[in-house]
Length: 254
Image 1 (cartoon, helix red, strand yellow):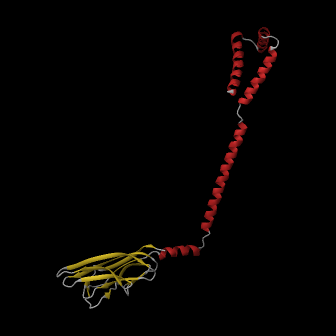
Image 2 (image 1 turned 45 degrees about the horizontal axis):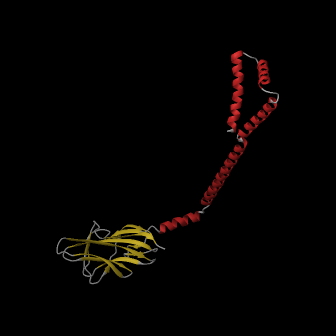
Image 3 (image 1 turned 180 degrees about the horizontal axis):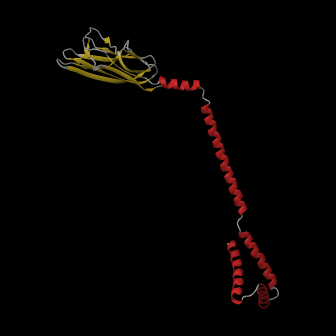
């Protein structure tokens, strides 16, 4: 409001001078004389004192009305400086993290890679490497050895013994299939540490026999899993690899 009063007073004086120049073509001296003459006619002697006071008040209004630009600039500069300091701190922290990562030794990197490799466990195999024929029947249960290995990541499966040995604690998925020819039943069981868990079984007088099964097991380090052919049963295999045994680590456990 004070700034507005100051501006209005200045505009009033400017308009008066311009109007006089337009109306009468008065020069600066004449304008001064006319102003003095008007003051003399219209104001008593004490008017000079009042005019001086009004001028002082006008100046005070103007001074109070003008915002402190320098103070605002100082505040803005302080804010910018603070933001720059925060950005510098963040940059230093990022550089420190990057330096820590780059300082990883080759042995540490290799250790991380080895840890990941230890968690990569999967295998899949079929019974016969070549040819075709029957396996069984036997008077007792017999562990099947799946020698035609397709995959053995982690080397946890042994194609000589047909046994999978868990290299670390975790949840594992196992599946197997059974195929045979009619006339004699076909049966096989998944066994964990000597305990029968699930059975795949089929029997028909003629034609082919097909069955399959699977299970998810929680294994400790060193637990063994394998497939056993049922007593007095028979399976048949050939180049089509009908009989398979597969397993893989779902996820490790602590």
